[in-house]
Length: 617
Image (cartoon, rainbow, N blue to C red):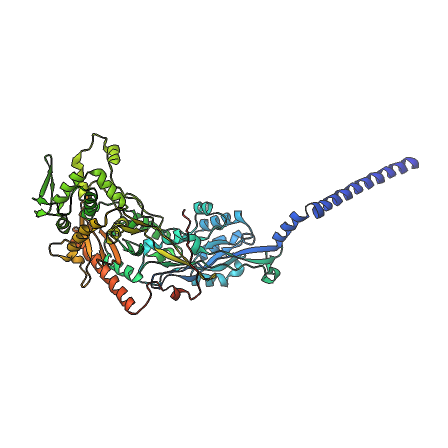
């Protein structure tokens, strides 16, 4: 009996020994695996558990106009954040009430951020007012994981708004987040319209990174490696604009309470001097958090303040387009400038009458432009033909984008034989469609930007420059100035053909009988053309295009006032006042021996010249 019990005890001991030995080898093997085989991988994971990386936002680049005036600035703002790892969801309702934030919005943002990382602060509400921030600081113990970051928001220090060219920034959307990639995260601010969007890469800068040591509960114990590994944010680059914001303010005041647009170019290089689209809105509404009611009101406004009329409209230009036909006829040897037509006040195609506002009698080309004689151009169009007219319009840039450095630009519509055949069928349209096109009506549609480009071409006798709003990009950290390059084109038209066109435009403004006398500038000869475009949906649209001074142009301009009536009485005075203001101010600057573009006043750092190519979306 004792022998049997001894054997049983021996077997139990042996089994226990084997089990202990197996467990020992199992732990030893796992230890070997962790310490030697997976050492690098788990070492990296361990570092992640003890080191927290917090991104710091860069200061967005500034914008300056051509006189060195800062026109887009930054002001401090505070953003409330939540660390998902530390946050007590039970406190969410109280936090939402304190921040005047919808609870569902708070939780939705928290969940999205948590999916990205539990150890990275999630931006819950930006541009928090001082009262709410103070209340949060007083009750901080009640909200574990809640903090705030100091950021910046856009500030506009000048009287001019320049809404549709400067553009605005807003919090990045899910679609933008996928498109822009890893450089951006939820809650980041990104340029959404205008120059803010076009030059986002330059303006944004680069995020910095702070490394902190945390314990197992996520509590910060101190900086990692005494902060030696921290990366400072890199501030955004500054934009030097071609614009004159004093002129912009004047143009906006002249267009106030109107619907329409104004574009002024420097014909010497294509720089945008002023760009106005009315009605507009206050960009500061978008610099922080835009209330939903404000956003809905702007979107539902029938006046469409969000719509850029300067680059996106497609309206008939009326009589301002007559010089396109005149050059087509001259360039194709169809008529000479001395060719005359007897205007009786009406022109017939078959039995269909096409009226004129006046009986002008016998007129040649220069007189027809001066007096805006429709009958002359009806007859000229029938001789010139649609194809020659279309080719001339294309040479002036119509029916295509000008290449301005803004996302939004309409090509307009310049009818051709192919277009008419496609729309009406080869036998569905006749020569009876041509007289309307001759005076800028019918299927034709243009933008004010295209019309300013057209005025620049005539001012320069066929030389055009790509319209642009940014002339240089300043990197202050690198002491570098990058000058942007833009395309210059020359129209293939004989030089002598420009003279009757320019003389006709001079008489429009400077001589009795001209339709644009209200655009006249005292002591400075100029040229222009009025237009009154018929509108089937209401009163006529008023147009004016022009340039000054006549021989050495410094400004080319196009003005569109919707539903305002005659161009000579509504658009011409606005254009004349803008040109006069700009030229007199430029004269004062020259007398004071100030450079037109005082880059040194923006930054005294030494610069290097280079070509900057902005990436297109």
